[in-house]
Amino acid sequence: MTKRLFDCPKCNKLPDESFAQFEYYNDWFTTYPEENSIHIHFGDPTEDEEGNIQEVTFIKNYLFNIFKKYPQKKFFIFTDLTTMDNSELVPSESIKIYSEIFSHDQVGSVVMYGGTKDLNEIVFAINDLARSEVSVAKDYHEANQVFQKWQSLN
Image (cartoon, rainbow, N blue to C red; front, side, top):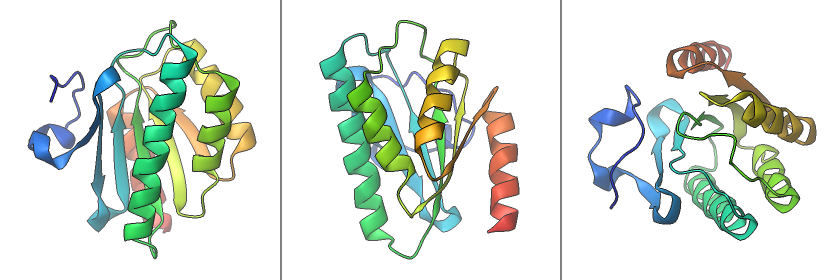
């Protein structure tokens, strides 16, 4: 496993073995089924189309396996963009896959936090294609407030 680039108050407490990892870009994923949440921590920016498509395909497979494992649950997805910059390349094929993910019946809400203005624009483009609520937040604490509100309504 590679070194963690993220700083998440919740996930920092977990051992490395608790995570799935897309090592090429140092992305880390974990699920908290008891609270219906999934944390995705992006690592290095993806600067090529093929790499981005492989990354989002990995994410889709990870999430869809979680959905199969917990078919009765809806999930809130925390998406940490704090290590990303404006060199991030998200081709149209990746946007379609993200839209497919965020339109899945078991995705209750998604909050992406720590992104640049350009990354937030990509989030808004995905939101236009998705059935789930996709929002942006400044940081983890603001994202967690969105989660607390979502949890109180579900």
